[in-house]
Length: 287
Length: 325
Image 1: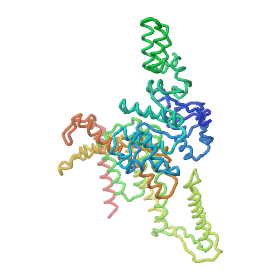
Image 2: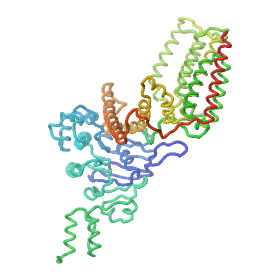
Image 3: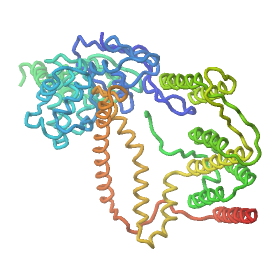
């Protein structure tokens, strides 16, 4: 057990007249890092997604209830050493490129490991930069001379360099072109499958959910309204319509084909290959 | 730093003071402040304070809001009062206190100071009250206890003149605070800015471009909440990289503050360029004559307030001249 929330509520203090504004209400949640899950969190704007992930590494303290991260407890009653938590749970915000500040790319990536007092800082930084695909000739450039996509990758390397066990991304693909988006997703899948990191990923993009997720959380108005696999999610028509989710493209196409041709097929396929095989099976001997 | 940040302390209650023309309010506040400095008579000052309270009550703004602004200045007020009492010695002698300065007393003072420096950060509530009690107890100790190696006896004399002057100055500062908070509580920053633009219009004679200055000011005001929000984000992003602004050696802390300042500059510049482009796209040309969405127009009550202002300053000058000779 790595991250667990029990009866966690979070409220932003408002004036006495309106009372506290609850963003999260009574949340119970367990994230097991042994499983190497790729967790996506979806939900409307303002449903509390960003607040939830900021609780995971102690950037926010719950108003009531307890957050247990690697056996360190964060609650409003107790003060905990947050640095150790943040070392193990890395968080990448939206537009992370704004956090760059050093003179060179390498130095900026070294900032995190240095703060956490890790050893072999320079090699860690170089490995992190290489894993996000930044070539060596850029290491001594100023981070502000890079392109937007490169800056974002450097910023992500800045988190990877302190090798956290859990990586949280708050809509990291916003503002990237399709190619940059795909590269970033491939990187995250590699981190998940090869380096065995648990990934928590906030997104609005159902294609990402269809492609990579092994577990999906749906947040609705401060409550977790769904927690399960993507297959369970997309098969649950009520959840899909309640949260006005758009089904992934393969499912939509298969659904259309099923209706038009009146075929008996399972439309819940998440990549082109599976969809093709299903169609081939259904059409059988027919042309 | 969480949630929405509202800049300024504007309190909307739609009273007659809120509906006054901001130019009138600004001018009246300035005149009122001048009057406060012109009169040197404690009865006039009390009269001003009474008048201020009537204004505050009719403004329908909760009095707590005004207390907050006074609270911030408590320390200055107390200090001025005490200094006036100690150092002014005209009028008649009211009390004379003899204090025994002993080695033991000095030792106790040093010990208390060290204790305060070490433990003051653990006191959560009423920190100032604890400090005042500590300081007072040091003096009470010196008043009653005279053993422990007497060095010298010193005395503090309280004269009626000092008491009068002390309370006079304190009341004047309170009146200044009240009138200025009345202005900021009843007027939005935008309104104030428009009033300034109109009132400083005469500077055109000296080739000073007032409209540009006020535009800069309103942009600055507009961007304070945005930049606070951005700094909050950067703060969190750097905290995720193990940056801790409360720990570490001095040189490390400087480094960590730089990790906040550099991104803030980058963001501020980017925002400025974006805004400049957006303004140009909408045809903004600096210093061109343009109409305003807020048209300021004097009404009858505005003229009445102006007339009252003139009467007030005339009365003040009259009192001053009359009692000066």
